Image 1 (tube, rainbow, N blue to C red):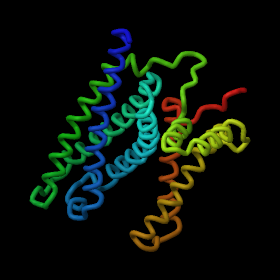
Image 2: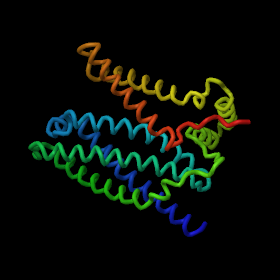
Image 3: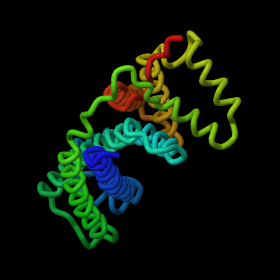
Length: 261
């Protein structure tokens, strides 16, 4: 490996590590401020419009994170592949930018309202938010430094795997070789293959997420006050999931086109 290639590799690794830390910390803060009622009531960024920004951030991170995690697991059992490492780093970079936007929103909310730090857990959340902000700044600096490595496109005719290919590799690595081969063949040849309906996959995924969110809210909070409120809530979830999928479809190579025989 040349010195230039080694530098690109380290730059991508730095983005992946720093961005993963920032994203993980953000999710911890989000969990505390949404699941602990006393903390949620004491902090201003748990109310709209700030809460909406955090909600959409979590949706985007979930879409990006699932695809990136699959790639990372698939990469563990194979030799280093620059194209796959680049996609992983791009996924983490997207998540980092989303985290940075959400953290800025939270900070703006904190500057606009008084905070009762005597409430148990609030001081901890503020400290974690500060660490998250610092981690996001470090990750953003790594992204800027790795700019060239992140922009380098795969070579023409590249057979770079998509997320489904990576899932097949994971299945094969745990012994399900025949199943993986059968699904791979079906994905390439079937007219119902997700690779032939990439936009529709995003729309259906968003619809499923919206319906699931309505059902989950009903289980946790009880019956909806009105069908209109449920429809608006589900539509926002569907919009967020579909939008995140469509934005990331190409840069993260979520689904490629079927290969020609």
